[in-house]
Image (tube, rainbow, N blue to C red):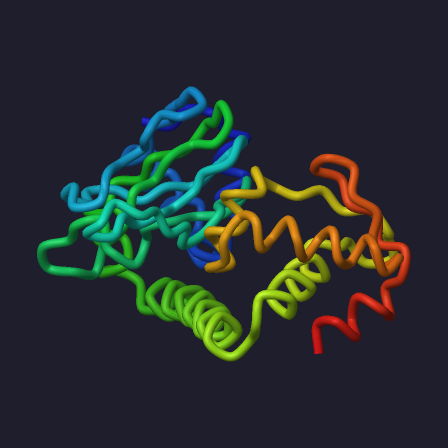
Length: 225
């Protein structure tokens, strides 16, 4: 059972749970446990039975698949405040379609799918709220698929940097190792590095490890079009 009231306050701010009233949140808390993982540990493996979904409190998680040849493909990078694996609760015999591995020491809330489904069965409003949240994620993923299909490597990298750049700021921090980001963008790590070096040579960005300073925002936008 979840006992930390601060975590209940956080749940109210997550779209997936925002339609739940106080009583429902209290009921849901009996189906939530807090778990800690060390860097490199797996939360679950591809093919495992999906009995729970997760909310990341701190740290970072990568969701990835393995091809038959053993090649890794990063599907998503999960950051604090985001949920993952929640759509599986609606499947008859759910199994995780990806591996989930923490990239840094992380703390997560583990939510039993059966408990949440029971709550939804008694609240039409909550059902529609969850459907809306999942629809937003689906549209975002479809947009990413279009980008990976239609854009070359340079466009993908430039668009990715623009997405990371905070409004009104000129400095961004890469959220993961470059090889992880490259896999997320479906390009080779050396291609990602070459693109960064090319943008730096043109005076568009300045690279210092994981920190990137955008010297020419308009120029970066031109490279993303």
